[in-house]
Image (tube, rainbow, N blue to C red; front, side):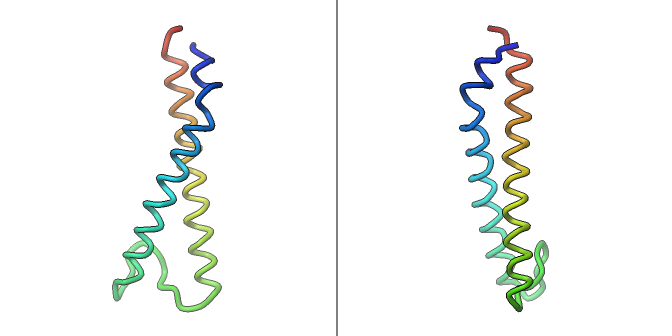
Length: 81
């Protein structure tokens, strides 16, 4: 197990996963709102639905960042020094 790989790169991997998924999900939400019948998110009509959509995008991005950390942990587990 190469623990140095994890300890040196964990913040970079988390940041990369968070920001990439945040931008992709945000673009998906904007495109989805232009449709007559939104496919992924509810149509934003009031402030409550806007905040629910915003928190969904944020928590999905946090989850993708954590998935990147798990992926980095697996890589560091299987890689030799």
